[in-house]
Length: 165
Image 1 (tube, helix red, strand yellow):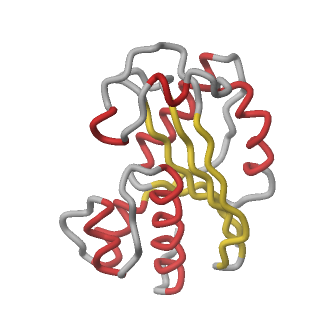
Image 2: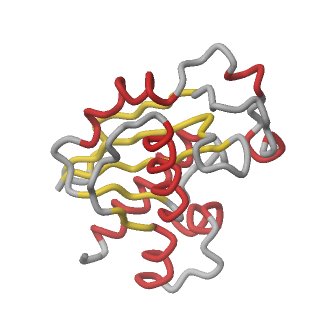
């Protein structure tokens, strides 16, 4: 089984305002690749700096999503699914960014480690730090790569514990 864990950080309330992405590729429950990119969003308006620490100055010279997409689109090839912690958010950011740049969004199923954590292990609350604490997964919360690595490890644990689709 091969899957991709992703995490987006956004600059503001617009879903197309991705300013960072983390990607972790997992095959046979082993992390085989990990990457993160800063992204220059379409607007200079940053609302969530207090959450992730990123500002316009951090990303103003970074590539826009369409350029980053050319570097990351291969991650969606040959995978069984994508997983994210609160996947409805990350899948909507992906769709909005693709739409903004007239890119065909990948047609792949998303699985959510929030839902899995509730259903499989009965964890409440299911914020990423809470789930990571349960499994002693290191986390620098709201760093896109750290969040993505944590999500990948949660999914690996779920698969080992018998999670079925």
